[in-house]
Length: 375
Image 1 (tube, rainbow, N blue to C red):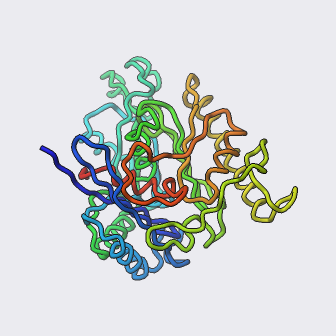
Image 2 (tube, rainbow, N blue to C red; image 1 turned 90 degrees about the horizontal axis):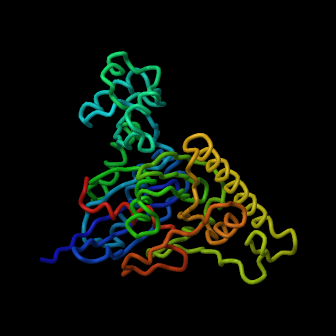
Image 3 (cartoon, rainbow, N blue to C red; image 1 turned 180 degrees about the vertical axis):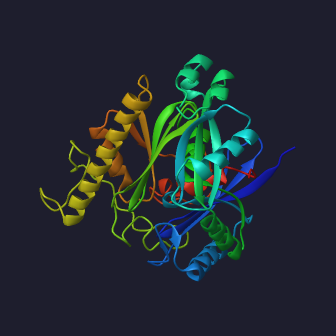
């Protein structure tokens, strides 16, 4: 029997709302049926904090009305600035007992910058497949004598927490716009779902996802099926109002800058049309690329020499709505040892019309929608 269902993914940033609808059908590839973006007025959201609730609700209503989705069930990603991600080593216990330990840790051991956290966690297994004895040797000083005597191995746990009042506020905004929030998750997991479902990365492999935004870039390292490192960096790739989504209307992001032509430098892959020095915009863009290359190099060295000495990050996948993303990829390829590529949608059916180079800008909401009916 054939069946199909539709789900929505919604990404809310400081400057735009992005929504994508995916149809998941038994025996067929997922289909991106439609997508839309709506630019937020300046100041409506700042660093993930809702400053003008009514304006955000109205903008989201307009977006949903224009898109006319088949479903109102939506998966939502919180901005990285609102979420605190911690990696803990805890006794390898069933999830119900582990949750109680984490609740105790949040009250007494793990400092968080907010009083009332809403949290969830994922067990990542023993570090790099260690056996029991190795795990015991790595036991933290805080492990009790009873735990050591029982020979209980440790497991890596990824903890994600956000202020409860903020989570409720986002859920209320979604509801006020006529949608039903089925889940709220962090952005790296939606990108991981997209690249692994489409075969762009081995689910158990080691790779880095870089979501390059107009003003903030999120870096996430995955290894052995789990998120191991996440960083959020303020890097200015586009002044306010000048990004890929500037002036977006009718679901088609506008303002996409063309890739460098044959005159681009073979050294760094960056074009320039205003002489050797280039324009001020080119200089700022080149500086942002250099900053990103430097941070990526540092992160890869940290992973290889401090966390997993026998592992290398050999692949970097770029997504995001920063302008000239293909040029960013060429710049990074010329300076880093790892292979660099843009996130792709070829493994999906694309019924929706994507303008040139706009798929990477919609990667997060598409990855969210691929969650399906799961909560």
